[in-house]
Image 1 (cartoon, rainbow, N blue to C red):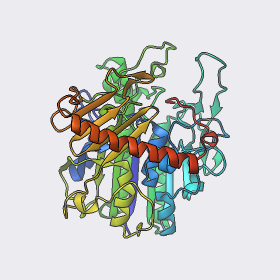
Image 2 (image 1 turned 90 degrees about the horizontal axis):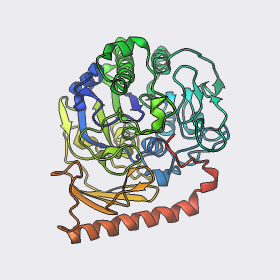
Image 3 (image 1 turned 60 degrees about the horizontal axis):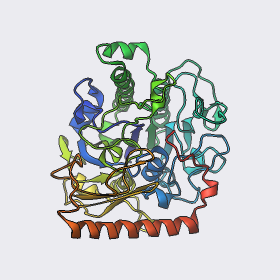
Image 4 (image 1 turned 180 degrees about the horizontal axis):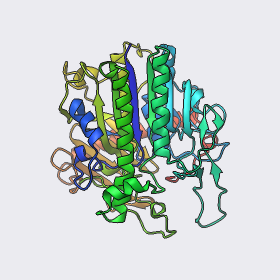
Length: 450
């Protein structure tokens, strides 16, 4: 049987890998993964913020069809992704895989919403949206107008609270992932390892050894480079363990990010409210929370020796919702009766057939967008959270204008109207289902990007 490793970073922009164009720092382990596998130049997260994008990745459904449409709260009674929604770890668990998570969950803290409720046999990490990298305390809500929220310690090992004070969380997540691989191999059990790192999400923390690597950079880029470099080293350690175990040829690895880079003032750690711009979305428009390309187009890599030809650049759009059906086809797991929004691109990634074409949709707050072929339409787009863009309807041809610099609605009114009709119809259907199946009150959402 094949093994699966699924790695996700947090708030990492499209341009913040050297294999994706970063020139001020390098990520050699991820670069090697891309060289030996395939690099996606058009991988889309299915949301511009983290809880919905994680729900989509693990379920193969758009966030609204998975029961998570916005950021989930971090208090210990906060509910999250409903237990009845099928998930990739549960599918693989039923197929006799050992299902493992090490890292950030952010899909609910209350009983019924935690990782073991969604198919993980063995899990370690934190459950809220962010924690301090050294104390592992969730303190979102401090230094804000109104009543402050009490900070809460948030680190768990198989649902038991554990304390690792002073240990840098990126390194702890890696150590736990490597140890889990060793245990699975000792038991001769195929494994699914999900490693959702919380870097480079704020707070902007990195050990001195990583900061010293980039002392020539301005502080905002220095700490971003240091945090991503620690993740890159962690991925190198995970790959090295796979190689030591003789599993390189039988392991499929996916890597991506949950959304684009953050511009939140909390990244600065100095109490000021000025936006942060340490992360880069390349030449793309928008950041985290925006449905323009910079908020949803993210780094993506797949590595599967003997299945995915090495050295490819995949230019056709691929989404996080496609991971579940693609993996299951490669693993001969039948998902024919499952409700999925993603499609299997297994044949295309293997070089055995053309890609499956389809419309792609996103929604966040008042924003809605659609991509059809090279055309993308954004309705009520926001470049800055809570501030509407001047163009309430924005049409771009991404083949000629990936930065969404020119609004083409006047040049192609029929195209704009057709895409608008499709996007609004999709949004209406989603809203109707949400009311019928998912209760907003039980979500415990914050509506903010913590």
